[in-house]
Length: 116
Length: 111
Image 1 (cartoon, rainbow over the protein chains, first blue to last red):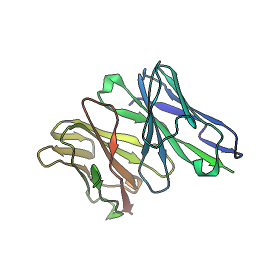
Image 2: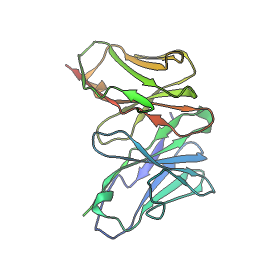
Image 3: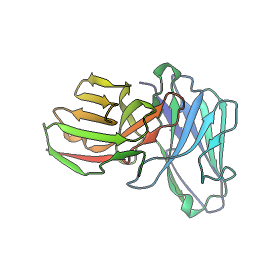
Image 4: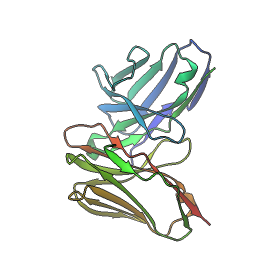
């Protein structure tokens, strides 16, 4: 199956700093990528849909100025958590849609963020 | 009421048994159905992908979709301890790419 990578796999930062998370599709071109957040023992919560070359579409309740998403190429999308606070600590997962695979989405391994 | 309902479990079975998982949904526009497996602290891994109604088999996994009943199932034969994970159903319509997930079922396969 298609492979999606994320970097870093985990990050610890101080409150008030910004953190950038990268999501890459390694063996296919992804016109659409998605960013999710997951709290312990809960399902995935979609934060935003990212289309290459255009602005991301954010889900209701997600602050677009706090969670900056850039999808500059067909294989890379980035999520920047700006001025992070302890409540932003979570597991962030990206997924990418493989156009050759219909509506299938492939997920990255996730990034664990801890804000102190 | 959630758009996709999934029993959270945990579902505990002995090694070698058949694991039976299911989801019900309310949106008749859903046409694409997926099952993902997620280990703790890992990203979801795609197991099965089905378009519209019918059955699909891949190794020990069988996915079934009954659109008339708005009900999908995943069966895991000859279950192994390594199958212990959370299983998520997901679906979307042809018109959009956004997936709607069930809450996940935690499965424990005991040796």
